Image 1 (cartoon, one colour):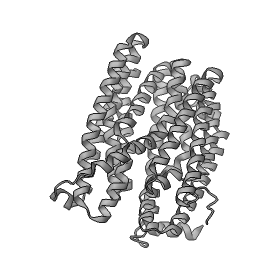
Image 2: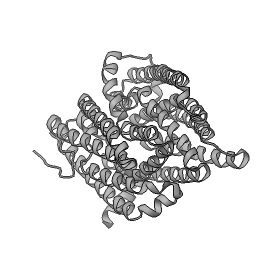
Image 3: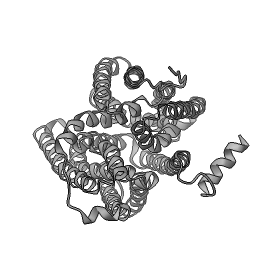
Image 4: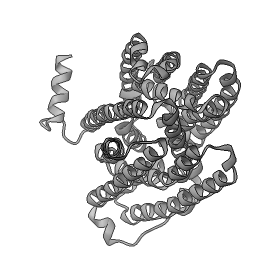
Length: 447
């Protein structure tokens, strides 16, 4: 253990292992982990603050509107953020600067049209169904639609920077600038004017604009100089062919979590959306290390597949899965042991989040033992298989949520989230093994 710590320290201090895959993975994982620690503190603190300042009903309005904005940003970005990771990394390795410039320009145009179009259509739907919503919820939803283009472009810029190899920098706008700006605005506005659920959504909109501007500046800073000196080359047919599968893959997490939140808000009470949202946010700690590993892992897997180094790929996938599972297990045990005091931090109105938190934490922990099968499939050209698993997950999620939320309430929504996610991961692990010969699980079985 001491040797490992010294090795990691040497890499981080740039004393050894420069230019190696190990160094890239270590810096990317540690940097991402550090950012996620900051993001989690900011997100947790902001959620706690909002829950206290707004109360369960107004916080439910905020959570409901933000859930819709997050959900709609997924089809708006068209899966191009994930496609950018793979294609930008490939074009950079081949020094195909024209194609790199082309996919950046093409993706910008596509996302601009889709995000504005989706936000406009949803706003009209809210208008036609305005009698179904309270004035506060209706206003919050309209404001939240301004977030759809911003969140979409934020994801797009992150994908481009990640593909260029700037894994940590790619995440700064979304994981730090957006929540930090939102927290500062929330505190300032509350003491100056007071706060409501709709106003909190508006502050989130302003914070999103700040983050997008920062992301644009970062991409301009790190874009290879030759890219600006060559004409754009477009491979629209190939890019479009991969768009729908990557759209579904990118939607997996948000679909899995937000559908039960929205259904809970409709079938139960709007406060239920806020309570389940709190449980999901706290349970996300279980995936903390896994998500940190994922960011540098994705382009690394693409590289190893390109050079056909299957032995190193299997070793990398197995070690990554075991590390992620270990971190998940330790976090799950801690959350279950402290579930009651954690949820009471948000106030007595959120006490019912305890059981959903336990269910979600346990499910996420088991899921991480199955490793990173989606990464293996999507980076090896089998994104269509991954998309099929997401469709199955979405169907299972919707059916279970519609059936279990009326029956078991928030616990039913939590079971729907966990059961559908584990189903998807099991299918992905099986198909990754079948299509690529790579065992994504902690077992690491080799042929």
